[in-house]
Image (cartoon, rainbow, N blue to C red):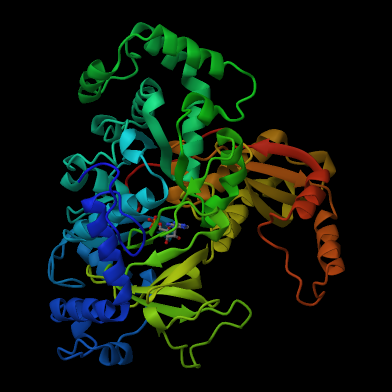
Length: 599
Ligand code: AMP
């Protein structure tokens, strides 16, 4: 296909034949969304008909929607825990899926403090690959010329473990980067990375980041897009540059590699990429030694057209910081996915972050939607549960919780995401990601809920007992002004014996005790990924929480119903709290974390 000549497609002129096919696929799949959904459900039910799980519900071979809906319950991870534990322990019988479980994907969502284990099957890799293959054809509709340069993406593998039964357990992206789908991907001029596979696949996070950054600097003029999976990851890379640029420019100047890079495959690869370039080294030195890092990304990578990072959901808190470092480059959120299943993509990726809508691709799984009314009381076991709505039947403007049935054997499984319908592409709905249920605090991929925070406060406050002191009220805040961000917990204390009040040492130990109580994803972020900073306790003056209540009531809250918010992010409230702080304390050490699971 000649460069510049466009192949027409309903979404717009495709950049090349390959793109035209991908866009055509999107068109056909979204146009026939309901039929595709019906087929997907029938395929899942037919192939898994003899699994222990489906047999339990006496479908008797039926593969139609009505039977499925009338016989199968909606479930959560906790409901499946016994089956998942058996698979993890080595039971290879067809429990959830007729296809063998190839590995577990470890979600950033946790259950009892540990990552949830999502069973997956080999062919799911193809489905994920298919969704990835649609992203650049869509992007090429909006940003021409991406075949004239490269993408600097900070991509990482994380540690993996084996379950007692010998199955691998690792994050979905680690599984993908280590797969042949990724490692031996065919050359695509529109999707060339500056990072060599050896750098992405290096398990040591310092060596991986260092060499990815170095390769990005070496090829700085070719970089057309900069990215990471989540916004927090890109900011971590900027922080890394702040801390390590003197070493990096030394390598650029001399053409020698930092001795901290010891991974043999990576060292070998870097010998082909790194050459002395004093001019480049001087330029980077000049830019990085400036006091002000505003716009640093576009100064170092001047041809960048957009940042490719997810800034929807919990990541929206990073938009102002990214704007600061990039001088306001467009932020592209391209896809919506999870360990359970990849869901869909943004068909208008250059839109403003606040306008991002994801189109769920009907071929990925069978999707249902639980109407979510934030104002209505929760239904109790005596009520008949609200009816689940099919993909094509959701209504614009309404909110729903996503429920999926996957090829790997999750049936009517509640993902925990709340989505709002913004429109349709053909007959496939498009969704604004509203939030994940029950998440109070999040800095990176950690998700801390109210119960976990409560437990952490309880555990930490044990240390105060010998000082006859207790925590009378608390709230929290995810502080993302620093990189990495950190949890801030406001404590109001009742000190009964002021002659024996807890010391700074004790209160900083309370910070660590809270961290020790938080879930393993939080602790991994602190210990292995360095993506979360030390937890901070801010002790506030007595009476502060009463003032907080007065403030809420002055704004219309009912006295009878008032509850202390366990997380705050409204500026006047934060200002009130901060103006009452009497002391601040930080965690003095890293909490414990190992890749091994507790159970
Ligand atoms: P995990 O299971 O660790 O892969 O996390 C998946 C979860 O991350 C999803 O269920 C969402 O809550 C969140 N997530 C994934 N993609 C997006 C996105 N594009 N925007 C907002 N949140 C997302």
